[in-house]
Length: 135
Image 1: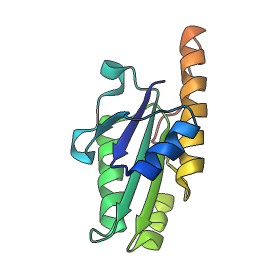
Image 2: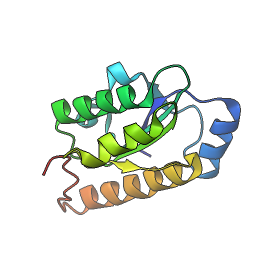
Image 3: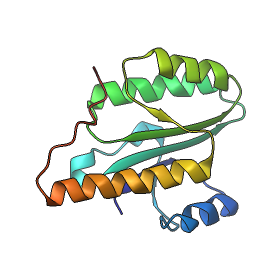
Image 4: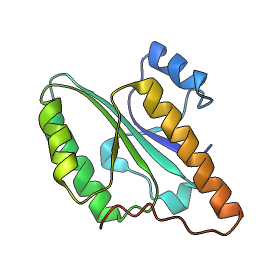
């Protein structure tokens, strides 16, 4: 499928992802170990974080820093829930990094699958898509 999931899942969340064809387990990594998309054939990145104790605005800043440093050229879908989520969304919206923030895990999983398929098809056809994250 080519979707990299960053975050942790409980059984219910695995079921939701399975409903979208992602299955479980996925390639799951910590935010500090975001894979280089070319190495793992990653076609989309889905970040799913529930920031209960950790503030979502700090998590969002880490996502923005990582995306900028990696100069990602694939879709980045982010679902954040928890403390300071409004501040996190504002931070992502004001940045120059193109992120698809989505509230629902179902919607985020569906979007990740669709975008991964689009990227895969474009690669097969040798068509360059612009998912660059900086303007």
